[in-house]
Length: 530
Image (cartoon, rainbow, N blue to C red; front, side, top):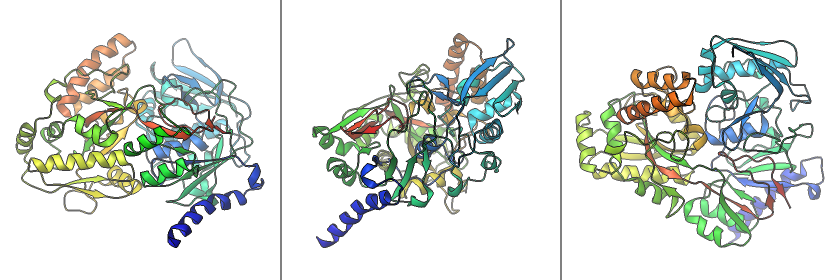
């Protein structure tokens, strides 16, 4: 009992200590405690497209354009812009009052260097770079994109928060090799909150303080777009990996918000008259299985196809999300979205373990150990890994899960290409993905099928990539939809990943938290605490 009390006192004392370190008296501070879905391990948004990294980046960095709740791109850091009649020149002017957290003014030198760095790492950025003739600063406020050919996705690409967040950094950080991470001491943006490096405790707390000199846009907030207003003095991400502990902390008022509570704690949160439980995204995200296509057996598409037949979507969804807030979906581009076709999925709509076993045999599987890398830190991801491992073992595929925290798991599958028997080798990971990231062949990193741009798992397919590029280069929606049909059928043949179902991610917050915005990924500006 004494040990419990000491832990509880330490938990309660930490926020108080953080408040005491600020210049403003603790009693005058407005602090919101958020339990994030995962610990923040990767800070530089160009090193990972992970949601927790995007959340960090959107707190402290601004961007040129931003997507509203319906994924329409709107000006964010720019005051106005003009497009030439031939659609080849975009002239953009920064809005007044933009400052970095160190007090320096944001200039076009910062913007140009940041965009160029982003275009090297991000898939959407690389497509934009492919049609770019030049990107240059005219003066401190005006910069110009010149294209080789008309491109329909310029504003949309610059508003991206689907892949690597296009953060505008100071020029000195933006000139760092994009393959090298910007360090914790240089996380200096121009967004509504600043990263408090000296109060960051990896594995425990991440602290953000209101940036007093931030000038928000005049428009109302709308998804990632509009006025990003910091209405509280501090945001503190309080890392609580255990779902029940997090739920108890919310019920007791020790924290204010849970980002994606586990399904098994939702009933008790919904019963409380002090808690709001709700989805935020108008279209749900989905679960996915991604196989390592570099090495046997999943370098053979038949083995990847087999993964779609091992376990029914219902088993994944019920285990990960409970008895509600989900539906079956057989679209690589998210059901209920504009590109949410399911054509070509007919052979894979029902689980067929016997056929899955035969496909593994045809792919050359001979009883080798299959490693699934996953985490229990994000309950929904870990649950899918357990369901898949059980299904594979049931058909004679020797699968086991190797568990780690999300940061370690993420780094492993993003970077480790080692073959079987080498350190860190993996065969499969499970994940969840947002509607905004995966709804469009341009933004969907899972269907990039060229050797230079393919995401973790690294499948390649010239035919599929050709169709994807044709979709992106089409200049009208009718043509895009015609290409989409062919592309989607090809995806079911190549099977770059397996959809495990679609879900509406739930969030939970105390009723004194106001201004939570509908958006495809959680944003924390505009919220207030009464």
